[in-house]
Amino acid sequence: RKEVEQDPGPFNVPEGATVAFNCTYSNSASQSFFWYRQDCRKEPKLLMSVYSSGNEDGRFTAQLNRASQYISLLIRDSKLSDSATYLCVALGAYGQNFVFGPGTRLSVLP
Amino acid sequence: EAGVAQSPRYKIIEKRQSVAFWCNPISGHATLYWYQQILGQGPKLLIQFQNNGVVDDSQLPKDRFSAERLKGVDSTLKIQPAKLEDSAVYLCASSLGWGQNGYEQYFGPGTRLTVT
Image 1 (cartoon, chains in turn green, brown):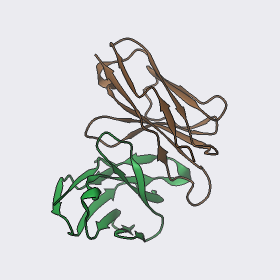
Image 2: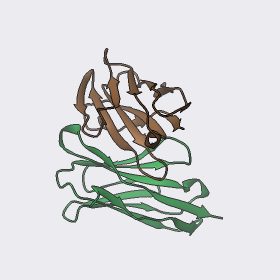
Image 3: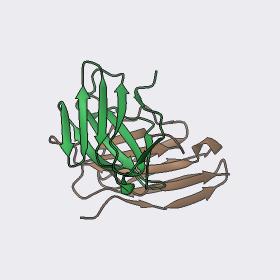
Image 4: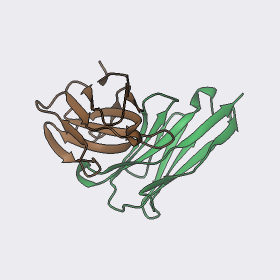
């Protein structure tokens, strides 16, 4: 079993739709979580950090369920510019053991 | 604020040759990371430095890969000898390394390596 798994995608949604991605992690010692977005042939860029039960930033909401060991990312009112691959990251204790998931690709269609 | 700098951006070498990548992190960031990203996969952590000490190198193939951060600022990653399966993008990232947001990583543009 991989340490961090994500919805395989791709997700193809129309503009204005709401879309949710799931991410599960196997290391129960994981302390912090992050969502990054990565555009084609570009570096990952930090989208959101999740340290407690969740976080919200504009159209983006992340929720953490420690009991079930999953994190979700919700995007409301999707824009064309949201098209990218979304990477889930789990961080272990003491700032070590960063593990990226394989990513979920999103295409927002006009 | 300047971001993470990496060079070169692209490199093509033949198998069994050696190659080196350079990274300069964001000023003041104590933690530096090297990742390998193969097409279609998420980044895989190769090595993590805190200042000039190694925190995690459990996934670094030490028979051919080496990395150093001698003065606790910039870093080099070397592959010697290269294999075909080393073809990937090598990403460098840095973070503050302390405080609540200390592990939020900022990535450089990466070096795209092709081994023929």
